[in-house]
Length: 498
Image (cartoon, rainbow, N blue to C red; front, side, top):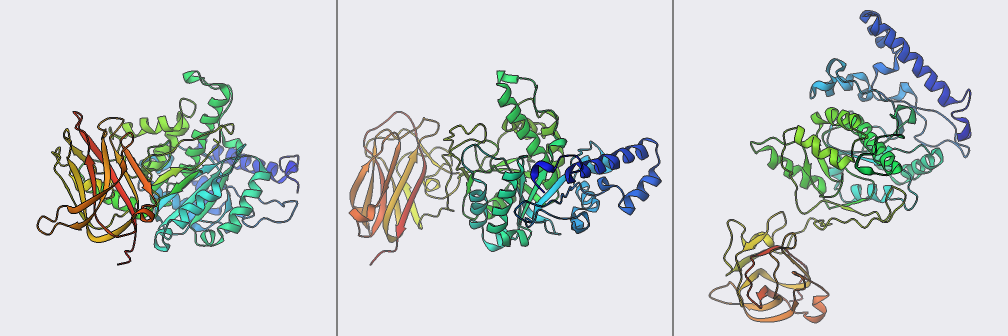
């Protein structure tokens, strides 16, 4: 059946919506008249679709043939998508107990089906048709390719197709079905859709912050998209990670997230949101017990402000006053064109590292006076730590002594924070032959180059210095009054020929 006929008189969508309205009208009548026993009998018999977990499944024929995953019947819905699964959710959150604060929305399952068992992590992202570019498939490929088989089995990715162009939807679903057949089969990927009839008004809204009407419509719909996505995902994972549909993922991001959650849960203070990227609504992690409230919060205030502002208010209302942001970031914005009007977007997270970075084993020394516990080795190790030293003088240094001689191929050193505490004058050197007695430096050093605006970066070093090095030294070439922060030292290597 052509798509233009779906909503026409007698079309399958029109018929489906009519049946839904009759069910809801009958349900309200039973409830308003207090006939709870009769209502329960209707539920038990399956007469009311709303007694089940809200999933709307539409069946229609594409002009070019059936689309795998686009046609499912209510009878084929797994048990975990039933009302019984929602009652499991209610054990973790009071919101859904006894139908408190009901959020009425019906979903359509486009591809895949979640596992019967709750995963460790549910990853949610919403996607719309863009005027320029498309990043959904590369984003999904990055999520799965950067995860080990064990990690993939511990997570489910939920994609809300938040657009109403059925031609684009069918094309997107075909591509997802062909690219991620294994993930769909194993319950690691689920694609859902919500009909436009469930959305609140998206035009004629308040123009807070003097935003243009089209901008208000865009950000307000985005809030509703996220509300519906989060509501659906509430019981699928012990934790929920919010992403956007145009990101790269770091290698083994789930293992890193699991480690940080364990560390955070050992602390006395409670938390509502952990952040694994500083950008927008990317890399924000919640407990599943908070999701019913979050979904309703975003829907209640959908037209007031953008989602990344609302999430801050929600975090504070949940009594977490300060941001808990982990570095390096685990997700990077890849999109060049925004989903809003296709405008150019160059937003990048400066703290993102694609791989789980591990410098070679080494000891780190410095004669610069250290501030508190910000030790020199923290700049060498992966993680949030950094070296913070008091005003360095000419000739002061930070020296890395490798445990084994190493052929260095690339070096990145970043200093300062927010434009302050930069190393104004310094150079990076490689050294050979560790001193026999002190073992805290090398006999000879060769300069590679100077810092520029507090940063040093160089690749292809092995083409200039192909012998193995035993030390790396940051040498201060002019004293400064300001303190100095060495944020990170990252090197790439290859196995020494010797």
